[in-house]
Length: 262
Image 1 (spheres, rainbow, N blue to C red):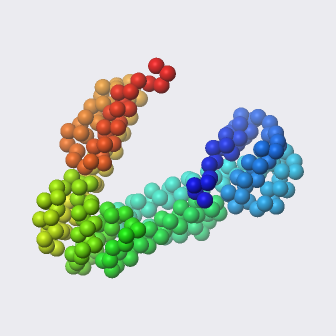
Image 2 (cartoon, rainbow, N blue to C red):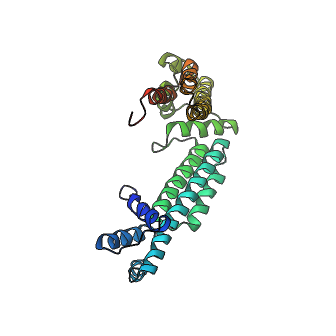
Image 3 (cartoon, rainbow, N blue to C red):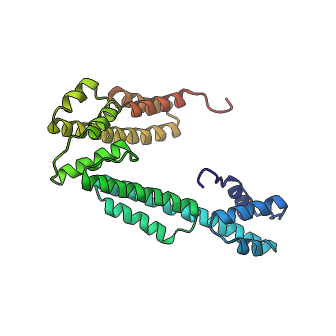
């Protein structure tokens, strides 16, 4: 469903009618748009058809569609932020409960699907942490993080072929050389140290980049483009993680590009 939904048109219609007080004209196209959007936010066909019999009720329908889209988006966004926070702390059960709470009240199918995917992912990570067995459908670095939590809970690290393969994949993403990774993978102790290095480099890179992005944006908005550029140059002077180097370079290119219409 998520690949099919685009709410730009209904948002534009709601803005024009509900914010700019333009009249709602129930043309065939508008009726079709309202009926389609109503289905997408779990308003029954009969209720939508009944609402389209008059302008006041059609306007109420438009308002309800917009409200469901807004409420669901805001609810899910806040929930995902909370899930990220709890996942970083290792509280996977708490993170799952956040998504269960969303599903207890959410009616919009798109947002329910997204919440269900997140809940399934979290349950999978909890299973990895409980058993030590990797799941090929889950993100590599997320699995490293829960395996590290498993070790910290007192479980021994089992250096399986699957884990070696995962660490060989993730090591280059943290700028760890092949030789360094292979040396670490000769023992569980070395593998644990390598896991910690990969996770630590990403955590530090994320914090560094986000702080620099905040300062860059503030300086750019204040008209200090040179100062904004320097924030990303400072990142590049120390950053080794390829992903965050690419992101900093992209920001620099954006600052060096002429503004639209110039």
